[in-house]
Image 1: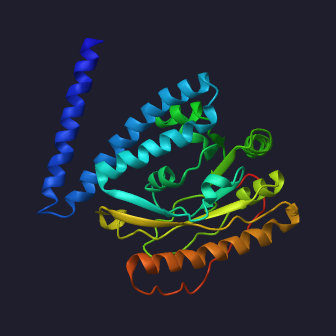
Image 2 (image 1 turned 60 degrees about the vertical axis):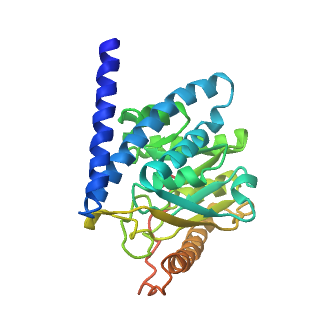
Image 3 (image 1 turned 90 degrees about the vertical axis):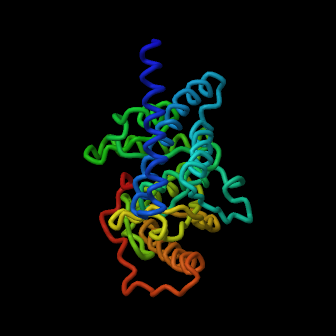
Length: 299
């Protein structure tokens, strides 16, 4: 055990020294800042995931498992603020995040940095959905499994449907909210845009009879843009929109609900990015399409 602890201490000291050296080099070579913040972000994620494993076990033992993901999200939010200088600033004057429960929260999905965004907006009594492959990722997968993440196997439609049915049941019986990214994958977009929406989140909200709460994050390619090795510090605005009720809707309404919600979020995304950059944004030539096979397993 002593030998293992010795190796761990040496690794952390070496990792910290390497990260700081890249931060110092970024004063001369700006691209070095990309490496420095990437290293800082990864070690922060691992540390918070380890903390999450312990927190999930402890909170489960005291009957508070429902807030495990919120507790770890907040820890990651504050840790990343100090290690990378990045902060998501949430505009929620009506305290929708704190007062709307249960609900299906949805947001636009840009890069891996959205994990930090969740740290800023994640409400109590909420869990995420994730692809089944993440279960096998050390530290992060352990935490997600212990804290009640709903895993979706996109290659197994029957298993995915069962997971979504389980999520609907959890929403109804435990008043547990769910956070989902309806684009289904990261866009890595340099300008504000949305990929076509999958309809799983909307089916889930209608099936559960709970409101959809859209959360829009300004395009932050000036903060992180992997293709150009850009990774800067800064503040990124986030807007929580008014809840959209679904109590009287049926599965037949899902297509229209998806389309209207996407258009609302795209409009707000453009406005929010204009404010963040202090300059007008050209409206995309097309809003894209949210058409596709409507199922309850898309997320």
